[in-house]
Length: 113
Image 1 (spheres, rainbow, N blue to C red):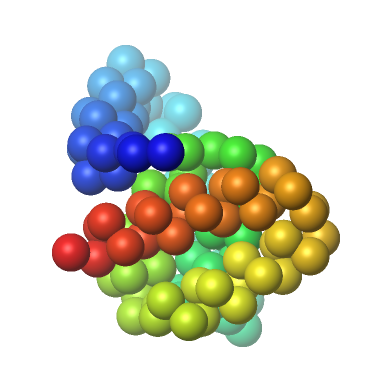
Image 2 (cartoon, one colour):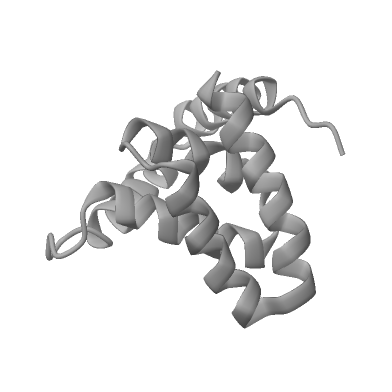
């Protein structure tokens, strides 16, 4: 499967911007959810992004994959750390997580260039 992860991410950011402009309360709500996930500060940004990618493999959300692959790269995640996190997701969700983990790996490699 070939996906233009950079293009998908750029399109998603434009779409998110349009949605936020059309209904600012939606963006405010998403920001509240996002901030709530880090409220205790027990996990660093890299760990949270790796968890998000593991979850994205089980929810099969390509936009989530692009957004959080970019976030993981920016937070300093290594490919090896990503592979370990995806291994946990695959162990819990078997086949579907395996397929989407390959998408995540592709996104990570593409966006790291």
